[in-house]
Image 1: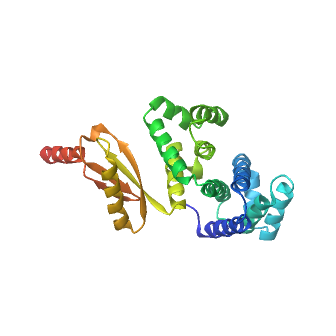
Image 2: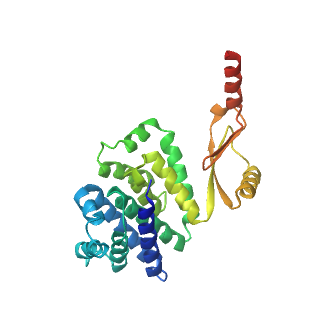
Image 3: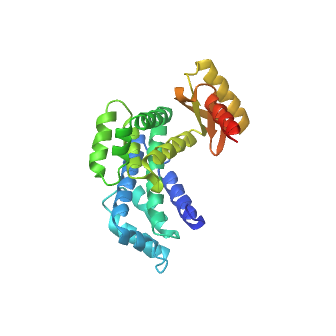
Length: 273
């Protein structure tokens, strides 16, 4: 979990990026996003650089100057100044700056998609790809294997998604392959779905049913959950015949399990006592 000081550093860098890209085009923001994610990749392989950029013995201005020296003329000015602002802040651990740069890159990619009106589509594509992976054990193992070269796994993802999903979706799946924020591949995809929904000011509700819901049922469930949580809810529906009947809904840490399978298991446990 990020410390309070790293969250402050991130917030300052986020504000710097937002103010610098207010009038930028989606393509310009996408370029900055790719640069930020490339820097995250560099930090992932360079622990000495992570330590240098978070060294409490150096002043914030010195650390910001190091960023400008390393990146000036190599990436856009907005990327340089966003990262200089980040390095000027404080971090409890060197690993936190990697997480912050990675998050800035993902957020920038979502901002670019928002400018193009593609957020809802990307959110759905990320979720559906996660379902495809979880439903194919061999694919799940291959994509989740940290011992396999990232380039090989990224090439597999590109082959699966190219021409079938938005370029931003493909890039975000590649981010998930790296282990977004130190998470597993599956956990990374879930987190990116939630960040995409949050960008649309929506809460994600994961719904599991035995048979597909009708459009009317989905709308009614979404409306009910929106009333409960006080904001729009984005339903992510998974059809799993194994639950037999009923419905399971998870929103954040809240879980409502009204499935027939749960009731049968509860009855079995009661009889076993």
